[in-house]
Image (tube, rainbow, N blue to C red; front, side):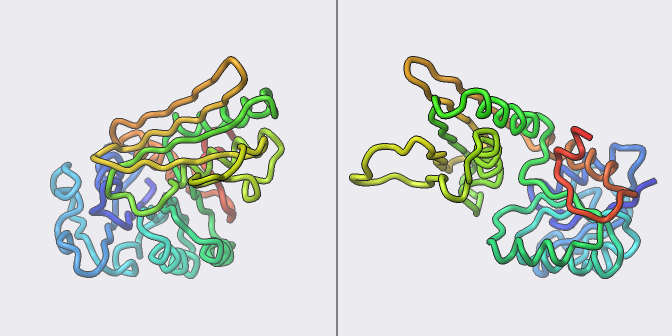
Length: 266
């Protein structure tokens, strides 16, 4: 039995992760954590997620919520994830992380902190989305420079980072497939007299509104034809199912940083 704690337990993703972890016979939820001041503190994590009482109280201290855990699941914000990763590293805990929005400096710190533990980190844990990453890479490789690449991402009005980590991953997948340096060719905004589109650009445009869970479209635009690859998430269960899969995969793995590609395409 894999013992798991969830940090960010009261969030949209945290609740669904808790729910689906509690449905799996190979997993036991032993802890749940939320930020100080959260209205969810001291509530039962099972009641919070809709499965009924499980005898696990939501705590504001990761030391309390995760002391018995084999794997810590973290869907929070970069600053909190860095603190949680430090705890995991010091105590030999595996991690599954879905936090996005890291700066380059935060990402550098994260890699240094987690060097001695097994950790899956991915901007999107949906199985379908990770297959989309692979298809994007393959299409970019085959189509080459004859097709312009544009990405449109749409999320709910409460999402705090833009572009989404998923859109950035799609951009990097397209860049890898087409042999480009994403950091040099990514174009995140267009306004005014900007001149003609450069051939190697990879454009990423952001839309926010309503309660949209997540929608990503990669457009390969040629002369006289266009290929559109779209993934639409209509609820959060597809992400949470990927988390459960990652939890069961990472347990017992050697130290290192892994992605959902490692989980799905071993």
